[in-house]
Each structure stands twice: as structure tokens, then as C-alpha cells.
Image 1: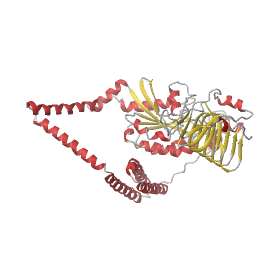
Image 2: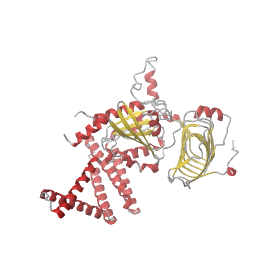
Image 3: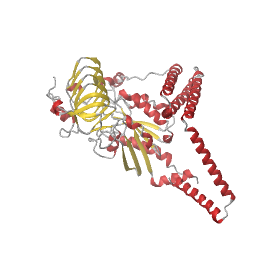
Image 4: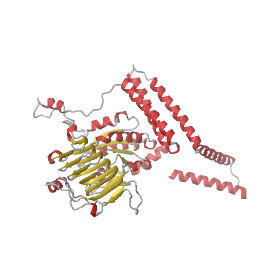
Length: 184
Length: 352
């Protein structure tokens, strides 16, 4: 029995996952987190620092880290990379002006060695806004099809209405579970 | 962590044995001693290697060598990109892209010890690489350009013959998108590239929509209604007044202007010498700003009350004095980048 197997077994027992939620400021990361946790989303302030939520879902214990996306905070993102099982990249689908910024930040992130094993879920958020780009358009602008290094999936959602949040998280859990909790 | 702790313990044990041997001559297997010696030597060697690297001169030399070697490798890759074979070209280009991104990361990581000049040089050559990479890609794998396309026409044609049954062209049920059919651009309204104009939008045009104001100079903007979001970018010398914004307002690169709006969140970036008459139900933040001053929202127009209730904003909760400055994380001392407008200097009457 190798070390990896032991580690897998240890994790399996706890069935614990660490999810890191990143994206540009105003993308809706905190709103997604709170909505998913069933909290009030009308009083959310721009995140100065980070929020952590631990919640149970489908028998998994999820540690979700929501780190502020302001430019001055992005250099601190790296401090949260360690042992991340899943990366949730949140996009403000209506923010056409910063799609290029968004693409660059994401592609830089995917080069990070410490995120190499993580599954990537892209939330095309704010689909409730009439000016939102479709998830197909965002897939194209962010050049997701060129990602070969990570398992990825893009899902259109609305943090305000809660639409598709569950679908996204479920996909992420399935993908991670298939990877780290495989039968020995 | 457990593993690391265990290793520490082993190290301590060995040292303990070593000591014991000196004092009371307990026999230690030669094999163990050898291993310990090898380990110590290894640690020493690594430390030396590390120290030699930390001399800035050497680091810079290492950087410029590696950088130019990598750059040459990418250029070679691009030059040898087979134009005729699509698959091979795609593979080469992909490799070149990855290498370029790595190089960018290498540069980013090396930023701390490079001089301004070296940094600029490296950035410039990376830029050139990017350009030639894009050109090569265009040449070898022409791809349709990304565009906000209108899909409404296709939809109408598909839907016309079958009036009651769902049309086959419709988005599959499992797709997570809200359909963005119709001409997408028309969903966003606003003004851009204007100079010295009075610009207004009525309530019905902005209700629950995203309003975008960009590249305006010396304009007066009046938005009589409740939009869903408001984006203000690259404006100077403007006066922007807007009805209750149901979610967030995003301000970027704004100079010598006056803004007034109620909203749920306000994010202000790269803004200087601007007054904000604000009603904010959660919080306002500033980042890379200077000379921004705040006062409570005081503009009014005939349908303001209705728009407040349409927006869902709480009229009794205004946190306009609670501004977070992301460039000023010191608790206790107030940020020098923003101020409250003194009562006497606040605007009380607004032009129509």
C-alpha cells in the first residue's frame, strides 16, 4: 500500500473537500456562497479579505473559501492555493468590458502548480441580467476549449435567483469524488 | 504536516545518538552515521546553492540567460510551424502558447529583482512573441472571430412553421443558460464617446437593465429610473445622476466628476477628485483612488419614490460613511484617499 493510497483512505473517511472560489471583483462570489448556504444575499458588501463556509452536501463536507477579487487582493490569492480540490471561477456575465481581464487572470491561475490537480468549474453568473452573455459566448471569450490541464465545465447561473448553483456544485463534487475517492 | 513533524523527530533522534556516542561511546551502526553525514552534506550543499542564487547579480544573469533562451526556443517553434498541416500546426501553436505563458509567469516571478529597464525589455519582447503567435494562429488556423451575434433570425425561422410545439432549434433543457436571444447588444443601454452633451434616459428604457457609460467628457447625464446595474468607465468632468440601482454600481477611471445614485453596492476604481452623493445599502469600496469624497444622496426627481420601491432598496439604510479602501488596510487610522464632504460644501440643488 503506497503513501497515496493511505492519503486517499484518510480523505475518504472524512469525505472532505476544499473548494476555492475566485474571480474578478463584482463577479458574485460571496453571493453564490451565501445563496448556496441559504443566507440573505441583500446585504453583502465587497469582500475585504475572505469568507470560509463549511457545509455538508450529499454527505461531503465542503470547505468553501471565498477570497476577495479586488485587484489589490489578487496577489494574495496564491496563499489559498494549497490542497485545493476544486476551483470555482466566477464570471460576471454582464461585464463585457472586463472579459479580457477575466480571461488573463484565469489563464494565469491555471499555470499555478499548486492548482494543477484541481477541477475547474466556471460559473457564468448573473444570467438573470438581460445584458448577460450566454455561457457559450463566455466559453469562447475565456478560451476554455484550450484548457487541457484541468477537468473543466462551464455552467450558467444566477446567484440572486439561485438558478443552477446546485447543478454546478454537483458536477464539481462528482468530478472531484471520481478523482480522489476512487475505489482502491 | 504529520509527515514533516516525523522527519524532524528523526533528525533530532540522530543528533541525540551522535551526542551520546561522544560521551558514553554507545555504538551506532556505521550505516546510520554515514547516512547522517550524507544528509548533513546534502543540506549544506543545498544551502550553498540557494545562497549563491540569492545574489541579485547572479539572479539577473540567470534570468536574462533563461529568458532569451526560452524566447529563442519559442521563436524557433513559430518559425518552424507547418502551415500546410492543420493538426501539426495546432499542436505546435499550443506548445508555443504554453511556453509563452510559462515565460510570462517566469517574468512575473522574477519581477522583484529586475531593474525597470530589464522589465520593460522583457515585457516588450513577450508582447512581440504574443503578437507573432496570434499572427501565426490566424495564418495557420483561421478561426471565426468572436462576435456578439444575433441569433434571433434563426430562431424566428425555426419557430415560424411550428407555432405551438417547441421548436427543435431551442436550447436543450439541461443547458444552464438563460436564453440570450434577440440582439444581445440592445440589452445594454447607455452612452459612450460623447463630449459636452446633456444625456438623459427615461425610466422605461433603463428599468432592470444594465446601463453603461463610457468615454464621456464634460457631459451631464440624467438617468430617471431604476436600472439593474450601472457601469461608469473613463469619464471626466461629468455629472452623472441616476435613480436607484437595484444591485451594484461599478466606477472605473473617473476624474473631476460628480456622481449621485442609490445602490446596493458601490465599487470605485482608479478614480480621482470625484464627489459621490450616495445611498448605499451594503457598502462602498474604493481601490486605487484619490480625492474621492462622499455625501448622502440628495438628488430627487418626480418618480424617485416609485423607483426606490421598484429597486427593492431599503430607503432607511444608508451606509454612505462606511467606505472600505482596499489600499488602506490599517485599522484605526482613516484612509487618506477619501473624505466626507462637509455639510456646508454639499450640493443642495441640482439642475434639471
